Length: 184
Image (cartoon, rainbow, N blue to C red):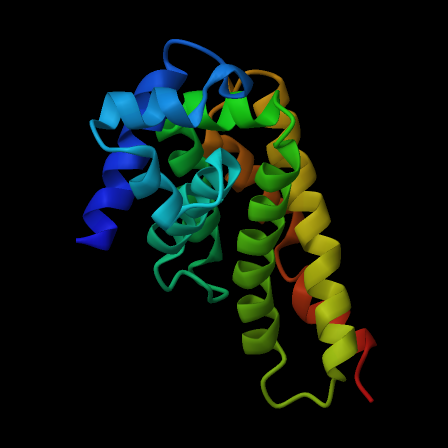
């Protein structure tokens, strides 16, 4: 029952985002649209930004769904773009609101989790320190998220498949080469 209520609250927030910006939506707006009381909202979430974070985290889990290997990272990253497009009002409103930090944190976490899986896979059989693997994943994380934030800032108009294709072409084989340089 808890997940159903959370999903209903999320659906209400998405509906309201098509009418007004995130920073103009109140808990009262959400609970009235969802036809629950405020206590129900606060049983599940601390505030609206907690609801937004939950929406991003559940979306990330669905988007990635095991796409954390060298052969599938492009598909996983593309699915993060597609999730953003499917939730364009939420993403753009979050980007332009005071909770932009949550969007960025979400993107950094999702992207890091995707990339560290790729780095670990590529490092199999190599003697590379964990700190160095983390550094490589962080380096690519910042590049990927920077591109995605720029895409969001410009209105999410470019084709995500083309963006992922460009990234893939640019870094093909580079993770393995970076790991080779950090061998101990």
